[in-house]
Length: 135
Image 1 (tube, rainbow, N blue to C red):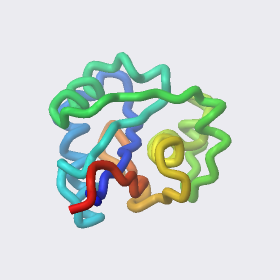
Image 2 (cartoon, one colour):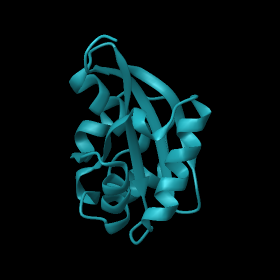
Image 3 (cartoon, helix red, strand yellow):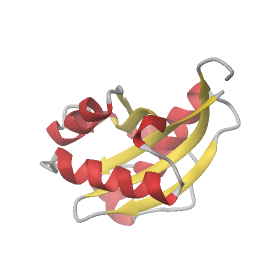
Image 4 (cartoon, rainbow, N blue to C red):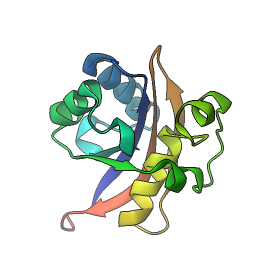
């Protein structure tokens, strides 16, 4: 079976796709994975129209999905940000979105790489999402 992961991403308004992709590459490398392991990007539903997140999803050839703040706030994760809570209504975007997306597809998924940050974005990985045929 092919290992696939969900990447959770949080970003400030106006963050460009290149920054998001560099951060995703950093998180993937920390877990020993390449871009082809990414099955989807997940974020806060209010961020799914952000050009930088859409550009990153297009570059990776994966869908971008969003979750409401209430759903993300209910996902137990190790990292909590008072800044994110005040700004968007959930104490975690990247870790919670990655885990929510992974669990929706593959029960038993877990965080594979916790929150990494750049100047304007955060990203985390969860999985495994097992897709494809046995090899």
